[in-house]
Length: 112
Image (cartoon, rainbow, N blue to C red; front, side):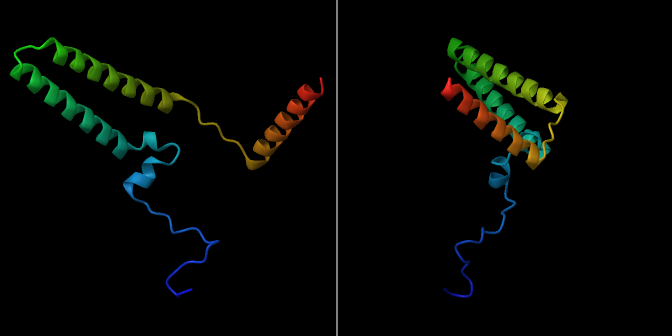
């Protein structure tokens, strides 16, 4: 083992990059992530509107614009619901107790 390699039992250092941040729970409320989602959906809407004009009013682009608008509205609604939802705080002991209760309940059901 060289001095710059890590032992197998040590986790690699945490990367605070954007991709790793997206994959963590609760990252959908990160303002940077929300701005990026808004930017992507606005870009898609702009492209679809331009294609609608260039195609002289193709019904396909009308429906694609409608679908994009519904997607954007549903993302906004979901984020608003997440922000309004109360945060659930559980201690590690409560999780253990809950899993033990669940195991015992499953055992009782199997016995019956």
